[in-house]
Length: 216
Image 1 (spheres, rainbow, N blue to C red):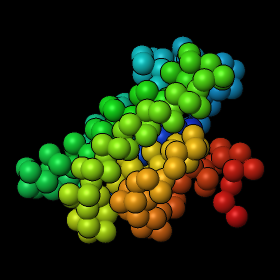
Image 2 (image 1 turned 45 degrees about the vertical axis):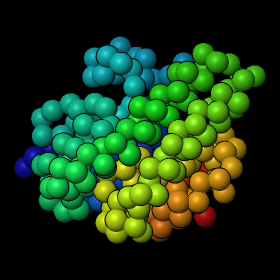
Image 3 (image 1 turned 30 degrees about the vertical axis):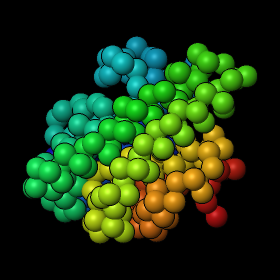
Image 4 (image 1 turned 60 degrees about the horizontal axis):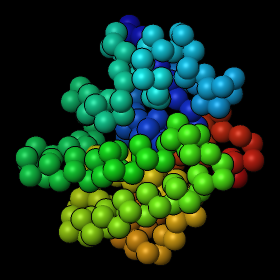
């Protein structure tokens, strides 16, 4: 019997959150290994974890005898090797659009407001900084996604960019972004968070979620 996959994760890590959604959508049972991003100076900086991921970032997924890192290629690996919901279309145009939407978040927003950057910016300015870059990215995403959206980001089926949108909206709310400025993003988000896989992966429902942050 193959070993159960192990996800190295943290409740509020948006990159880990994306992979949790993919695992839930694919119906993959997995074990959770918590890597606290703040405790003890950040457990991602330990020698043991650095051997798994020299970038000292989450997530890592141990599956099929491999240790995978970086959320986007992890999700594509799961999509290519596991049955169930197809997150990328067979149509090359739709596949490109899906990746482009995901990359607006993955490259254009998240790296500018991740924990490492905010720690460097400092407490006094981190809210202003994060808000600025999320708004800049959402200004672009709102324009583009209006052209592709149906019920979800691309048409009426859950696809790759939906897994990136939901965690990023969490951070937008966390950093006081006015989501009424982004009606298409907000509408899609409201639809997605009702789905069982998205509920299971939600930051508020994880084993390491602080009690004060748990959904009632």
